Image (cartoon, rainbow, N blue to C red):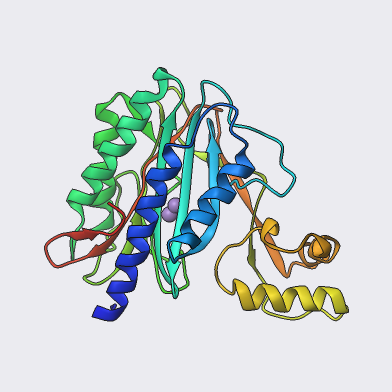
Length: 295
Ligand code: MN
Ligand code: MN
C-alpha cells in the first residue's frame, strides 16, 4: 500500500510520463535517428523533474520490446513502419510506465487501434478483487474483435518502489489464473497486438542494450570495481543502458557483462516476424476501479 504522500509522487511520475509520451509520439517520423529520439525523451523526463525509470525503448515493426539504441547508433526510423515508444519515469523511486504506438503506414492503424481499445477494456475490468485472468480475457476479447491476435507471452506487471516488476502479471489473454488484484497495488497494463496470421508470441533475440545488475558483488580489478560501484549507486534495482555510462569505461563494462555482474535483456521479437502494436498505462487499484496515472 502507498500512503498519500507516496501516491502524490506516483501521480507526478504519471503526469510527466504522460506528457513525455505525447511529446515523443509527435517526434516520430521517418529518418529520425533513434538515438536522438531516445536522448530527447530522457532529457524531457529530466527537464520535467523526473528520472528515467529505464532507458527509452524504441521498438520497430516485429520487435515487441526491449530495444534502446547504444551510443554511436546510426539507425533511423524506417518509412512505413510501426514504432513503439515505451518510457518509464520515477520520482524518488515511484514509477510510472507508459507506451504508445505510432503508425507510419495506414495499414498498421488497426493494430494501434486494437491495442488502445484493449487497454481501455483492461482498465475497465481492473478493480480490487478481480482475477488477473478476467482482465486478460477482456483484453483478448477486444483484440480478437478486431480480427487480430494478442501476444500471449507478454504481460502487464505489478510495480513497486524502485522495482519495475514485483512478480504479479496482467496477462493479455484469458486463462485459469486465479490470482487476484488487490486494493492499493500499482500495475502497468500493456496489451500487445499482432496479426491473426502471426504466432502471437515473442522470442528472445540479441541484446537490446538494456541491462540490469545480476550480481550485487564487486569485482577485484580496479576499473571494473569502480564502474560496478557507480552502477549500483546510480541504478541499483532499475534497468539502465551502457549509453548512460562514460565512454571511457566501455572495456570495464564488457568485463562486467562477461563476469555476469550485469546482464542484458534480450530484444523480444514476434516469432513469425509480424508487426506488433502496444499501448500501456500505469494504474493504481482502488476498491471499485483504478486511478489511471498516465492518462
Ligand atoms: Mn513499458
Ligand atoms: Mn511495462
